[in-house]
Image (cartoon, rainbow, N blue to C red; front, top):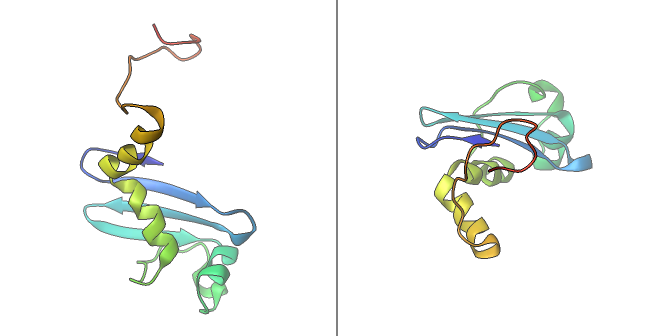
Length: 101
């Protein structure tokens, strides 16, 4: 998952045998790309025609709705805060330096 303060994001949702879906939201437009297993688990549409292609998800696409929730940083961090304390950005550490200063 990657997101920014404007709400643009990329999410990869891997559900084991049920398949994998990628979601990209940019400029308010959402597109998804799923493998055949995800398409079979998500709908009754022929999976072979859409597998690996970027498409606009339907309003009923429950997997896309789940993945898009990660695009809202405040909602995502808000879910973490009750379990981990206050969610905030920490100090920057150099790669491979062990623990941050």
